[in-house]
Length: 96
Image 1 (cartoon, rainbow, N blue to C red):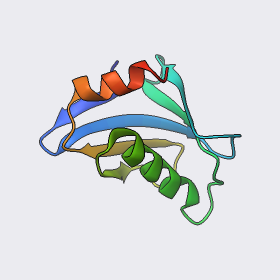
Image 2: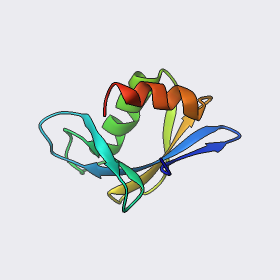
Image 3: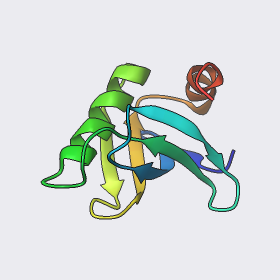
């Protein structure tokens, strides 16, 4: 999966979000765009979708999560602090 990269702070994850969905869900991997597809319940207004994205990924991984690019775009880059790729892939196995 080319959406995940290791950095000194942790890992970065390339994500494409779909706001206003029925529930939060990691829907799959888009091989063409090389992004994880994530569905969010929140609308993309006043940062609600971004807050939900960071909260859900922090809860899912147990690590602090920040959006480092794409704050006003559907395509975002997340930084998950102090995590390695193997640990992240183990979490994803049960979800995709």
